[in-house]
Amino acid sequence: MRKIIAVIMSVLLVVSMLAACSQPTRQTGGGGAKKKYAIIVKSTGNPFNEKQIEGFREAIEELGGEVIAKAPDQPTAEAQIQMIEELIAQKVDAIAIAANDPDALQPALQKAMKQGIKVLSFDSAVNSQSRMVHVNQADAERIGRIQIQAIYEMIGGEGDIAILSATSQATNQNTWIEWMKEELKDPKYSKINLVKIAYGDDLRDKSVSETEALLKSFPNLKGIIAPTTVGIAAAAKVLTDKGLKGQVQLTGLGLPSEMAEYIKNGVCQWMYLWNPIDVGYLAGYTAHALVEGKITGKEGEKFEAGRLGEKEVIKVDDGTEIMLGDPFRFDINNIDEWKDVY
Image 1: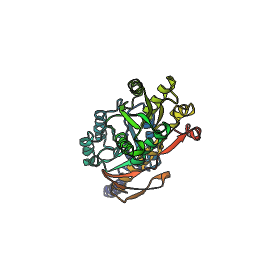
Image 2: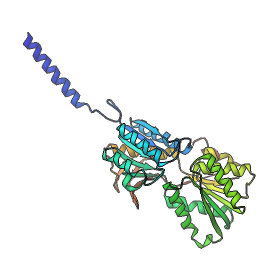
Image 3: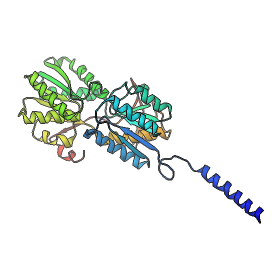
Image 4: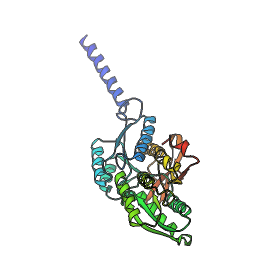
């Protein structure tokens, strides 16, 4: 009898071991531990960043993963580095980051990749050595040039203009500004003078004070370009409060929900943006494709990105990227249909 019991126990033990071996310890969706997808945005209190997190969460939840969202109190590289280190310790599967500096994050992100974590940037890129691929919201050249074209039309082709940017290290902002400068080289802009590039650090109060300083320092200022959602909203409020509608024109990149009142009151005739929810959503699907081995970040690779359809990895000067789409114009004719969306 003892021998029979021993045989039965041995069989049960082998069966249980085989069952355990057949179950993956980490997987996306279904049984087992969910894979962890981290997103790091530039800072807290930034509506654009909040919508990016929303889209990222939507994608990862569709795919059955777990989201870890992080946002530093201040838009600094140092704060993001600390968060990267924390995520490495948590053994996350992927990190998607909107960088506050293109180069300063390199040691931390390379450390993450060496430990098997899939790293991608979105919105604001890190250098190609610090990522596997970048998710770009729109073509940088078109974003930069179209804003100069807009202010040119608004101010009648001549006068002083200024740029109110985010941080001086923001790769996306700096790239757009370089293309703005390139557009200004066209002889048609010979009567336009770029007097200053100011930095509001994507902080509302600082963006307000920088706008006020521009108006004080350049009394003949005719236009402001703010390629940042925080900056354009802050500038619009200052121009409204000071009764400068029509005297100082404003365009740039803004959230429809924040800019609807300023488009309606005429302070900003029109502006541009893409959907930040879709930026985050695409980053989520890209992170999943990297984790699952569907892509590695090499040129020509393709994958399905949920409701956004098929996306392809393309070559750029600084590595590879995946493009969301073109910038979209918001004006008095369409702002009402978009202001409740984002």
